[in-house]
Structure formats: structure tokens, C-alpha cells
Image (cartoon, rainbow, N blue to C red; front, side, top):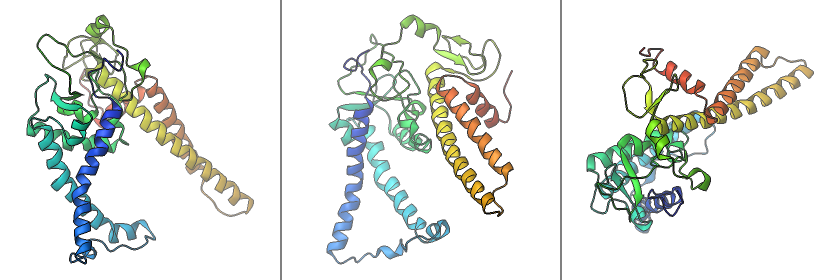
Length: 311
């Protein structure tokens, strides 16, 4: 499928819409500040902020963080939340940014979403954000849904798209929201018919949704695109973590060698070895997950459920 044929909103359109919406959300804050400044600051900001150049994390958390947190939550709950939820559930089906970029939010059947669903979608963005923002970049379905789109069961499509009972929304095989031509080719319909769902544990594929895998009897029979999205997210996160540990290992070893030359006590070698092995495991797990291997994902799920997997 070419970019021109794709009915789904591209990453660039969604990112530009997000930028416009950010400006809209922050506009009242900027206006309030200008009015307050013009009046000689009758409302003192020192009631929220007691800013000093932070000398430690503890100082920042005690002096500055409470005011920053209160301000952030107030903007999110009093301005951003009603703006996104009301606009996306309205007849316009999108915020001002989405209207400017000619995209809209619909449910999986192409209908206008309810305020409750728009509310769920807004707060589910927390999940997309805490994973290093990967929930905004990596698709978790073959309809270019981000993590919060998939969980709230909505689609973000171009405004010109018309849904009907006789038109099936096409699928794309890309794991990313980015417009990568080679990854946006249309998926073969015959392949889609037999591989819509896949077992995380034994790789068995089928076209019907089931609670347990027909082959191994375990829970974890998920849509193929969801599994691919989870693999890519886990791979990127653990690869980045492994890279960070590699830097820490290099730094600690360098410091230890200096300590040895100066004949002073340094970081124990056992600690260095633990960091090194953690680095290797994270890099191997992350890179293998990016390549489509499920070992890391299986370990994460097994640890997450405490080993309680139905058989």
C-alpha cells in the first residue's frame, strides 16, 4: 500500500497535530501569565515555587518538585483533558490540531466515539508515555494503532475516509508509525486469514481469537500485530538499557583501574561483573526481541504473572 492510498493518519500528521494542540493547551497559561505580569503580579508564584539552583536531587524534590507537579497536573486535568476528550467526542471528531491536519478519531466501525471512550483514550496515553514514548511510535495493530489507540479501541484516520458496511479497512504490516515505504506494503489477504492471532509461547497461529492456545493450552493467544508491537517495544527499551549499562561498565572499569594504580580501594570486581553481565543480558535480549525472537517477552510475561501460566 502506498502512502497516498493509506487511510490511516501518518506519524508526521499526528505529530504536527500534537504540536498544534500543545500550543492551544498552553495558550491559556501564557495568557494568564501575561495578564498577571501586566497587573504587577498580584498572584505570587512563590506560593507554588521556591526555586533555587538544585544542589541535589533531595533539594529539588523538596523545593521545586511540588510546585512543578501541581502546575503540571492542573494543566493536564483542567485544560488538556477537557480539550481532548470534548473535541474528539464532538461532531468534529478531533482537536484543532487534528482538524488542521485533516485527520479524525473514530471507533473501529468508523463511528464517532463517546465522551467516555475519549476520556479513556486520553488517560491511556500515560501507558504510551512511560515506555520512553514508544507507545506513540510503534504500531500494536495492523491498522496503525498506537498503544492508547489499541487499548481504547479507536482508529485515527484521514478525514476523507468513508466507512461503510461494504468497505473493509485495509491492513498494513509496518511495526512503526513512521512513513517507511518498504514497511507500508499491503499485507497479503491469504496470510492475514491464517495468522491473525499467535501464541506467545509456542508460536502457533490461527485466524480465530481464543482464550487459550489450542496447541499448548496456555493463555497468551494475542493478535499478531500486538505481539510484534510488544517485541519491538521490549527490544528498544532493553537495548537502550543495555547501552546505558555498557557506558556504566566502561566508566566503572576505568575508575577501578585508576584506583589500582593509585593503590586505593575501588569498586569491587564482583560488582563490576554483575553490571557487565546485566549489560550483556539486556543487549542480547533487546536485540533478539527487535529481530523477532520471543525469549525476552516470554521471560517478562512469566515474571509479571509470577509464573502462573495456564496449561
